[in-house]
Length: 534
Image (cartoon, rainbow, N blue to C red; front, top):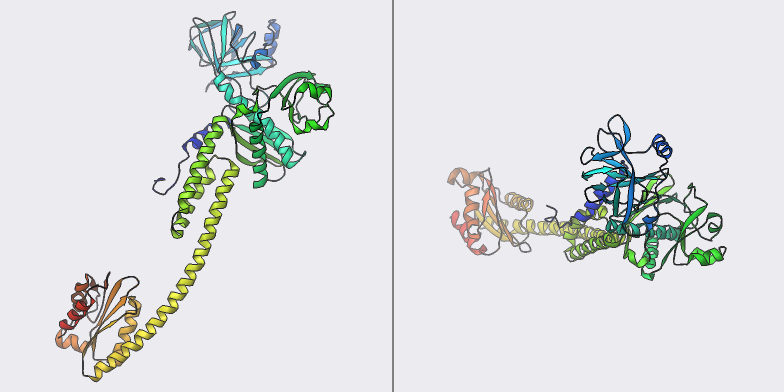
């Protein structure tokens, strides 16, 4: 149905929107009817009491598989939570596993957790989530093969293909923060973020929506940073010293440790630390951040800012794509722009309806907002054309109305003249041919004019509309002729109009109207009308 209406179905955009909605639900990983796999203070205290050290996760910044030991296994039921020494495949729908060391990134700072597998020769554990509780990283998911024991040595394998989709979203979130401050000013403060393998989401302070030109400026800055191929620097530094760097950004309300991880895009951190008060650093994105990042902005490939809106009073949200998702968004925008190009080739009268059907497709499309704005502006041009067309149509209608009135008046006068001459000549049956239009109302006026001049006469008036290549036949039979000769108006019309391939109708035997979609054969029709009454 959409194709029949000339619409484009944004299937890829729909799938991504559904994924975003599922992720925005904020549900913890768990199983229906079972307590969630969450470590409360009692569980972390138990681990500490068992002399189990918090998980070493330094390897999360290095993309390589590591070997680790299982130090705890956590399970839950509908009524209880407990640590066990071992568990077998499918004994629980999902379990939590704590290792002495891990390369998994536990969800933190707005960045989604890693996924992957933990395995050895006989055991396979799918990691669907990783969360950190008091320093203990809980790997959550189903044990699908074998038996897992505390003390087992396992291979830890992160899904780095997925991670590599998260990293550009995180790095470009920093650039987005930087771009917003460049465009809106230093009043902008971060109020939250979420980066995953599908897109990035950034919340910030603002009391009003961004204008289209501001959105375009923000997106342009982000794209330019990718084009510039800036290196991404990451280094640990004392918080007290690092926070002196001019232009450095930190999340409002966040508590940072004494030793912080600094992420700078485009400027080397040692140079910043050596001269932190230098105002030149304001030209770069510099933040405290514990997330995983690109090594160079070119790895983000592309950027598409597809959403901007309010989430709370004074808080707005921007969502964007990077990498392949951004390229796919650009592809969808290309398709929509091509559709507008095709619409522009249509006659103006057809554009109006097609644009109305296209608008909801454009409104819901997950594409770059600046490119969407271009499409909207083009549609506004179409609307302007519609307005101009409507004005022209109104003028044409007014002219047609005046012209029809003039033709009718001329036709009525001409009929009266011809009928008067026929009456003077003693003719009781009068067949006339005019070219004043084929409207039924006009035919009634012509017949009334004839009867007014010759009350006892019977009349057949042909009238042609040459512009629309139509011919009308109007018959009026006098009561005298109907009674004395059985003359029937409908039969008269059908006989005459047959020569034109037309026909007539009417319930009153004294009056009838016929129509034909041609003006060819009019002479034969006139002859047939005359022959019918003689």
